[in-house]
Length: 530
Image 1 (cartoon, rainbow, N blue to C red):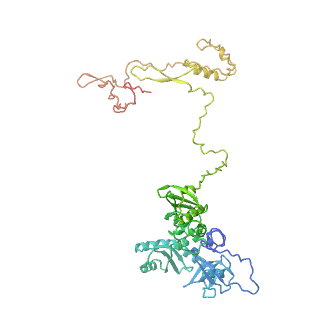
Image 2: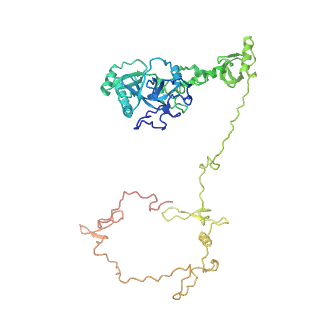
Image 3: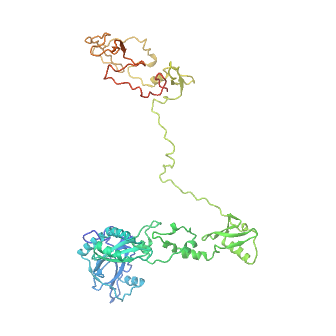
């Protein structure tokens, strides 16, 4: 698709994008361009070069102009050409003898009346052209809103300004004839410019706007295809394609032009094949053709009473049966001529380029690594139920097992961990140590002697505090006694309520007990169950 910003937005007129000044051979700047294979060849002596050039405008529109001023022009030059009225700005895309061939191809007369080139575009001409090109997109949005307001069944696809910004051409598509007299008046009042309306077909619209086809490449009509031939559904039938409109239609909404590309090859291959309407007569019944493989020369037939089972026959065998049927002879069954096709499994040539990645490497969960010294923690345990407390729930505790299968004695894991500990320097072997309760007290260490490694530091006993007064059982003076309070009737009232719980009336700073608060799950005594 053509680059709408080519040769705009720069002060010196240099095209943007590929930076090849409009002479690139692969980018969309050279939309529908022709390779000048005569550019490095000199003309015979005494022959003057052809004085016509090809100039490209917006979206691949090309015209031929005569170089009457004998200007030195090359591909990519920006020139001011003759227009009605005023002048237009375009880019030279082809010069020399190939222009004569292109004119004959498109039906233009080289000796006829052809508009001329005024001059090479100046910087002022390029600035006016760039400003006009920047006005096209917002003007197109406004023009569509006006057409919708007038309830016109048309689509304004593109707007092209003339190089001197004196005229704007509106390209539109419509299924029927449209009366746009009022539309032109509204456009002239809104834009204050000369208006010209041009109707284009749906394929021409896709060619001007461009796009990406279902094949992943740019549209053929916007890159190299110039003539639009008619395409019908018979081209799809000859190529054994599914008649699905969504797959056969292109971006323009019509049948794809590429359906005609291989049609001649399929027609040549079908000349030696029987028709799809072939009918074979056998003693078992009549058989109709269901499918044809043109390149392998195979045909599939099925009986009228058993359409689910297809039989494969070669084209030569079908012709032989047809010749017998013409002589009013019937074969026994088409199974006698059927060909067995072995379904060869496709060879798997998949190779792991990395060599270490597997597609199922994330399926299995990772195995946790046990830390050193804790290999026996949490293994070979059995649950031992203890007697429930009075009014409480039963508590289940795990208990380790010894290697003989029974329950391990209490403290077995502690002894095992102690055996695994490394022995410190200056300590007695663990086998020679005495129990703590029978161990004799150590002798006091003399002054200045260092404490051996591994020995616990002995701290002096904490002295008792004598300045703290001892409390007696009498209540404090600053705090009222909440046990019994005199009532208004002369008696005493207890600080506990009827349920046996203490009241907080005597101490306003104490939080009230919320009776509606939900208790944790457990028994009546509040013991949680495990």
